[in-house]
Amino acid sequence: MESSQHTYTDIQSSYDLTSECSPITATLSITVIVRKPTPRLHNSKTNWDTYRQIIQDKVNLSIKLKEHEGIELETKNLLKLLQHAPKEATPKSDPQRPTNNIP
Image 1: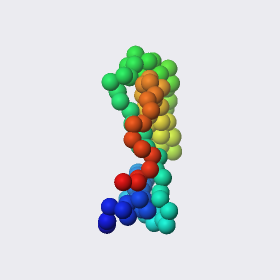
Image 2: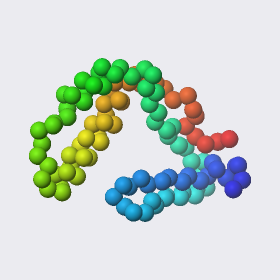
Image 3: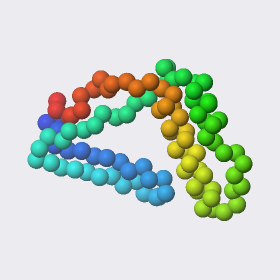
Image 4: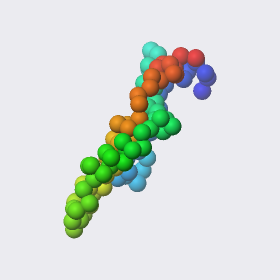
């Protein structure tokens, strides 16, 4: 693919962990595709005490996991918490990269 064609294409992966396949979505456009910058988290500025406090405050260790649905739900909740905590404990920064793919 020529360099100039990258401005009119976009390929996104789907990371659905419940599927055995990994589908992708390919977009071809006649106009330039504007992309959002990839979210980045730089943990050098993370307040680890705040991170630990968020985890300690929100994790529930007394849940009885007996049924498959309960295990699935609590696994999803734990993953959400583990994704949320560093975002809260790390200062926001502005992306330095442009938001479009024009060469």
